[in-house]
Length: 109
Image (cartoon, rainbow, N blue to C red; front, side, top):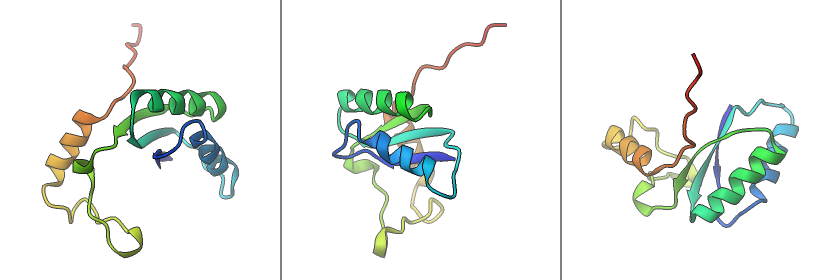
């Protein structure tokens, strides 16, 4: 599973949430984590280190806290599907530009 986690107002405690999801039934294999609503590079670094150290799951990227990167929500926090959002492709491109991801390793060969 790819886990997108709201990292607002947290630091290393974000790893406890990931561990809980890994331990609770139904047990799922978390293939990677994306940090959402990251406030600072320091916060991202602390969260990345905690998750990768204690959860044995890679952090694949981080999306900064930015009010222009919000999708509208419905009652009870149900997010409008990408298909319903206007200019979904443009929105995805903006998120990709503003997100951080670890450098890809070149395979030897």
